[in-house]
Amino acid sequence: MEPPGEDGEMAAAALRAAKRALRGELRQRLRSLGAAEKQRQSRLLTRKVIGHPKYQESKRIAIFLSMPDEIQTEEIIKDIFKQGKECFIPRYKPHSNHMDMLKLSSAEDISSLTLTSWNILQPSDDDSVREEALAGGQEQDCTVDPDEGNSALQVNQLLGPVHGHPQCCLGQHNRGS
Image (tube, rainbow, N blue to C red):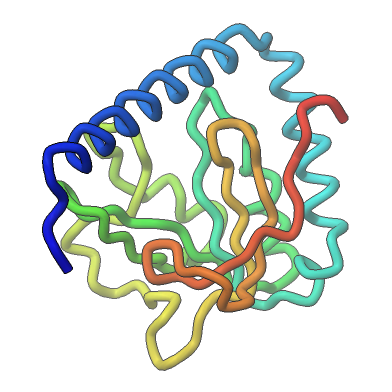
């Protein structure tokens, strides 16, 4: 395969710029939502996720800890433990696209996590005690992802890996609902 030429590099740069502009626009829209609307959407999403048959049958769930300007996942995390399911959260590697999904021992375990320079709570780099979701040939059954306010319930179906964790989207939270 031939390396991309100048046209390919220009197209890639234009795509990066378009993504950056879109992310900025989404951040502005999220900031414009009031606290009450964010809470309403968080409650709605929590009910949808917890009531979803795939969530109900899942035993190992990966969930991203929400940022303040995103749909909140705290109640989903509490339910994961209440239901006796296993909960996995991401740990990002600095200066890398690599991410591990590491096991939480309880909802309260979140308070022991390290705050990164990006204001993301995650297990510290030297935390080697936590189980990794893919260790021993196992993987999570279900992933809940607060993606810039458009949360999705995703269940592994090997339709496309995301950071090494195969998943597919079952449904997306719609702001209008």
